Length: 290
Length: 291
Image 1: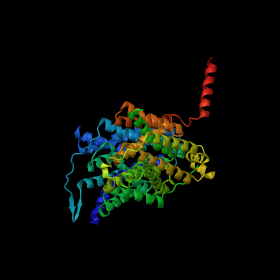
Image 2: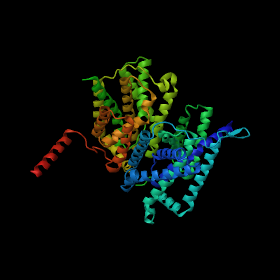
Image 3: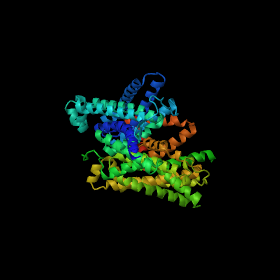
């Protein structure tokens, strides 16, 4: 029973990890939380859904289209809503408000144009779960876990091993000094949003398959943000660790305490973490400088 | 005065009370709160349960709702206001969602997601108008007092404010408490005007609408908050705009304002005798140079 709950927790944690990485990536370079990330995920889920249902493309291609589409949308959002503020060195508050505005716009624009109804992805993988001993593992959960691992490995390779990744790391460390070393901050911002958007795209498709697709599904990614905070905002390994910690905490709270109040435990976990360790599990404390 | 018009004025005052709090917290103190509807829900439910279940007199229930909301803000602000704004914003959003969750699941007390019907409608126009005007006066004075200046210092540069011995955490907490109290009051009035409450009335769209009003009017101006509450409550009501498109426009407006004119409609301009006189003399100067 406990083992089964851990398996369930990992499968939820995998989806959270995919989304939390996007929050952390943007935060590490631009130092603000992109609250419109969840809505990019929602649009990614719709792109995947419509390319499967209307264009009848095969599943892997649908995922690719969702990733590319969501990546481009995230890039456009950065250009419209954040770049002018960044160039003006606007205070953090304005970034958050702009992100919220973007989120409100995308969500309600989708409600008005596509409609507020819930849409269900077709069953691509058989619903019948694997049975390993007493454990039952959903096929979809396994696919999600594998996809998450692949995306995370790709991202790790990109950020830690390539020239571009080193430029992103430099920008994350200090954007101003990095720009003196010939790194174009605008290009880095575009790139970071492209990567975050693409991971949100695949996250959206998997999320949509596990649950359903609807215009305000982005709100659910608050949990992924909580995961990023628990792990330490701005740290990629932290986001992944935080996601699994949160996923397992949630399933245990739902199974043994109360399923109705599951979300309360996520917020409680976040509050405890930020009181005890404001930088999160894996983050480093950055002293504010004038 | 016809009932319809009176209704719009009452709704404007309800929104105004919640927007005033947000204006102090987000506009003047610089902490982005995205869970205003949660505090309204606390005020609405506490006051309604008191008048319906315990037959408490309406004014007492209102004050109780106001205090309940204030009390909730203390443990919420204590861990989160010390940290960077992001944590606070998400904590308030989480709080609003958690409140909705609790209300929906305590079915025996709150009626669950179906809500509480047939609440005695005791909110009357003169009372709410006087309360709202009093609160505007109160916030105006607070903002232009020494404490209000300290709040603005916290918003502009927290580090510099600390360097001149402003207790930034305390001022943020005070603003947060005032904000919660005003939202609670607003929720109590709302419940006893509409005569019916349910959790979905206090969802994210409501918080969104309120924050949009603050930003639209000008984050650094109480006059702007008042003006925005009047315009953004009355206009959709009069024009009968479908609510979904309204929120699309709000979202686009908020981004546009942040990008083009972050100080909002009025910036930091305040309505007062001296500012009116300045306006008049500026207008006269322009008139003289033309002739």
